[in-house]
Amino acid sequence: MDSKPLPSTMRAMLLDAPQAPLRLAEVPVPQPGPGQVLIKVHACGVCHTDLHIVDGELTKPKLPLILGHQIVGTVVSAGVHFRPGQRVGVPWLGWVDGDCPACRRGQENLCPRAKFTGYDLDGGFAEYTVADERFCFPLPDLYEDAEAAPLLCAGLIGYRTYRMAGEQVERLGIYGFGAAAHLIAQVARYEGKRIFAFTRPGDAAAQEFARRHGADWAGDSTVAPPEPLDAALIFAPVGPLVVEALKRVRPGGVVVCGGIHMSDIPSFPYALLWEERVVRSVANLTRRDGEEFFAIAPRVPVRAEVQVFPLEAANEALNRLRSGQLTGAAVLNLMGTPD
Image 1: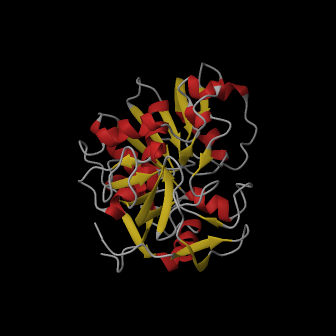
Image 2: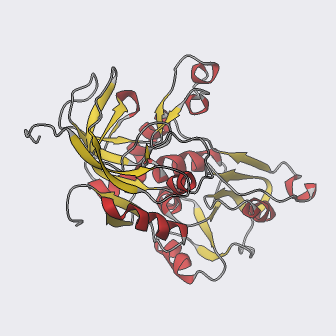
Image 3: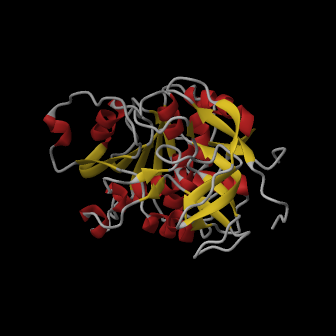
């Protein structure tokens, strides 16, 4: 553990208003409150949710805001559960009241008072952050910092999306083969599923990326796979894909929407939903999702393909994510020159 005195200020990328670029600023190092730990950030993933916040599609962020909810770092101040120097990860779900009906049902992801990292709470596009230690995860030693970062959202919410498809799944469709999909495809292959990947029409590079990560078949989102699907996971924020997926799942099949934001779903004939097909959404994650995913990920082992950017290049990373120019996941490195 670094014994240098804690600085009074830090570098951070600030969002001042929706649809504005992030601004590099020198701001005070945050001070942990009761139940919180101060974390020195090593790496932070860049997520589609960050993009939805910047673009104004998620409409109620705190402002100014430090984005970032896939945080990997080391504990600076001791908490009840963590010691100084211990490496932890911080996900999207940052706080719940623990006492509402949803929390008592074990659905803390639906807590109406929940607060989210990098949205209601300042996140990890900065050199330090504070977090509720109840919502920090110890990370497997197998993963370097940059590789661990995408596991905290693309991995965790992807895992919840995958589990929502149910147990009776052999033929799994995945729409939008990016950060979440390439992680969850590895878990699905490990568990014996056959994977059918759907990408933007004509995106040969994404289809080859999907095959590299275990897809048995990869093709355009507008075409039929060679066999009906038992379930489909949708990670692209594109409403019309719900209709496409319903066309491809068998009677009794499930379509799971894994994103926090999606464009409008167009109307479709009831016949596509009939025969007990199901459409459902996934909201956030629970701590149980984290415990289960970080138990299985090293066994697979799940490996994240990442592109690393320095903190001050956060806008470039967001722009490349917006334009579909990323393969795998983008990660900000806060520990000097990227490897």
